[in-house]
Amino acid sequence: MLHNVYIPRPPLTDFVHSFWLYNSNQSSSVKERALPGGTVEIVFNLHDDVVQVSNSKDKTGLRSFRHALVSGPQSKFFDGEIPARASLIGVHFKPGGAYPFLGLPANELLNSIEPLDALWGGRAVSLRERLLEANGTTSKFRILEDFFLTEMRRCLPLNSAVEFAVNKLHWASSSSRISEITGKLGMSPRNFIEIFSKQVGLTPKLFSRLQRFQRVVRFTETVHKIKWNDFCLKCGYYDQAHLIHDFRTFAGCTPTDYLHRKTGRLNHVST
Image (cartoon, rainbow, N blue to C red):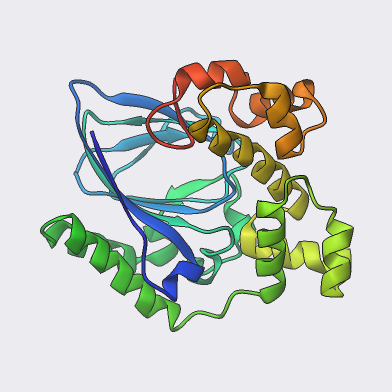
């Protein structure tokens, strides 16, 4: 299994966190659970087989995607199955960063996974064909980078109020009160929530909860000996029971189970 990551050059970094390429030649398919981060992901399958995923909006079981998909902002985990021989390339957007490229409000894709051509039509097909024709990882990343740099010039700029709120909620050691943020922005709570939800895809309150959960996930990648009580305070939880409740909601398991099921990729656990 090979997982490459590329950070795009400015000014695309205002929108995109990273591009990634996943290649696998396993003896059998891989079943994993993806944890929610409140961001949007676009994934191209560079083989002709299917990738199967299920999420909270689809009660019929696994859905199959052959060529490309867009994963909207997720507030719950979802399970997927990757073929034994897999080649996937994707775009991991920053919170709110996908909105200018989607062509619709991000909250319309909340907890949804859809074929990319349903949003982009022929542009999705054309971009995938170019990725298939490219030789080497660097060339594929450059194709994605050039595509989104071109698209960015036709997009509306990100809302400065949303950018401020996202940064505030992302880095705070404890959950910031929405009233404090709206007070600094000089906006009514109702107007702020509407604009934030449209661009990010989640309400500010739900986004804040996810960022608190994600702080714990990131900390577990850097700390060898876990002291959950310390993590609770550092990440803004009242106590360990509060932390366990969020893990059951967002990961479908306890914090201890999560440590045993971690894979080599952030926000992915075995099922």
